[in-house]
Image (cartoon, rainbow, N blue to C red; front, side, top):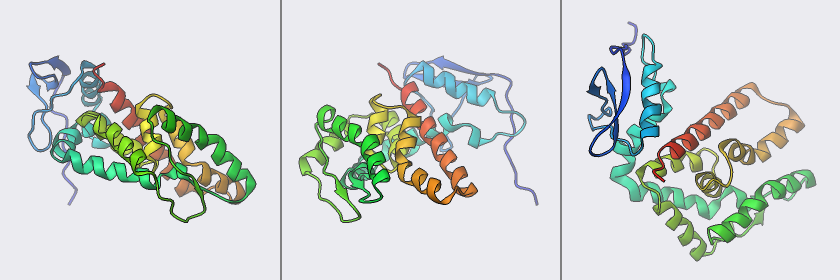
Length: 237
């Protein structure tokens, strides 16, 4: 038996402003989340982009081609009711941030990590007032509680839309500093992806690239890019 798939049933998708924000309408009917909540968004730019995703669907609806719609649904249904839990999960990345753990050899990799990561460690210390300690190898290093508290404050400063974006900006590359750097406009999504892969790219140069690993890396690059775009489109300022 073939799996049932939802098919396109509308002719026009458009964004409209309402009393609480912006919504997408399909032939005059408002789009709702899978849980039947009103899909009200904070900016016209985000609503227009979501409408474009709906308008781009052909005969069969493919959620994989609608990352902004999926993120908006998650903001309303998942992040809003458990904001503190999501924020705490992301804050924990600061204690074991990728950028704090360096190789002790070979020297070329050590230098690549320093060149790529040191500027962001310095940025976090100055701009976020959250200096992080750096260590070599796999031995854990305890971070200053005050630094971790300040990083948590930057997470808490996000609204549900920003926190939804920050989730992928942090968890996909595995670094709170990289995620916050994208959210603050310090680096773009592609640079965050590149910096998160310094170790992997170095190993691939030594031993060759694996097709599955290349595909997985590209999927992560796309995910970071989608999250960065969602964050930018949802900004009201």
